[in-house]
Image (cartoon, rainbow, N blue to C red; front, side, top):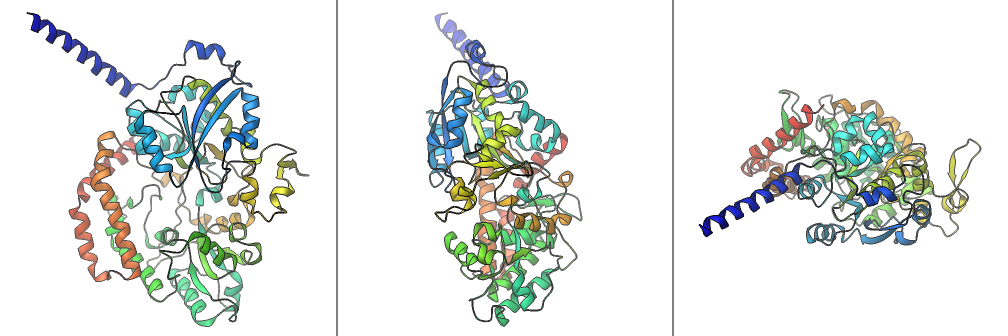
Length: 541
């Protein structure tokens, strides 16, 4: 009888444990404590009546300020909020490793800021209860962000997980800010185009002819060692050309996946005939030395130096005038989308959400409502002005048109600092990955430069529309576990063979072997998982 009593007690304990776990997995709300509510102001500043201190883990990109414990905008924000943030700065080189150790090790901060946490990691640690769901907190304490979600369903869809929860505040662009959503875009050396007596390329063949002429006809008259196409890596050129070969027709948020134009079904396009044709075209460019031959190994600073000297006939990158030099960067102008060999034409732009996991709150945080109010400020006009522009009279002034404008020590720095280097002394947005909204009116970074806007306008007619785009697929815990195995192997193999085919380290005669290898790695199961994620996304529309 005694043994039966023990068994009964154990059964009750297990049942309670299971119930608690189930509740944790399905819970979509976190209630602020009575203590927090008493100390919290409903609106306005300060956010809290009595000062509180929070620990934030912050990803520190090379372009941003090295220590946010003493930087202009957060010093100012601390004063008006009554919230003291202790920042742990983590360099981008060690960010990934430190992030995983911190998430898995239990010694959690109150929040992760600019740590670029992936959707898969948010799902994993959200289900475990490490990260708290924000749905109700957003409804109750984030009026700026809630307004954005209500007005732009694509953004809400992009950050909602299969369990229905939102675990993060993202880095996002206003959906109408095309230049910001484009990322890298195509530029061509206008002076060389004129020297070669050529029109702006409109097709892939005309682009090839321009590159070939740069190599053979020395448009700089021997003053510069010309390189027809240059870049810090090959990926931006591939992205630019995908639409010319009928690929990525549902956007670029789910690499390697689009809709088969013949069947209307989900397609893994790296084994398609169109993809092979694109790889053959890029291989031809590389083989004929029309692409920088060390594009797979070039140091980023060397690429910028080459661009600063006007060495490239074309690039797919950011405004050369802003990121390289005024002297030679001014000669680059935007290129249009190129029509491919079969009449295909299109440009992939990012969905409005650039970094879904820009800000998350952990279960250690005793002040979740105040923390949500803290971050929500940066999705409204006042907060965006502080974040991007700083403080009037110290970093910006209001110009004659009534718009904020950076002061001369940032725009024309006497020490010869670039805009981003000068701005980083006071602001933290250079480098990206932060929680906030990027708008054309207030964001004064590279995407807002005239050269960037002009280049965006060139490709705008051929951009995919948001209604036609698939946002980033979200996966269940079981799906994530599978994809971290054979799914990662498939994707790594695609990139490995892409680069080998382009460089000639593997002949394209081995294409059929490459396709069979991918199919044998579990492609059928990979597509089933992706189809399930797509079905969930389409069901929620």
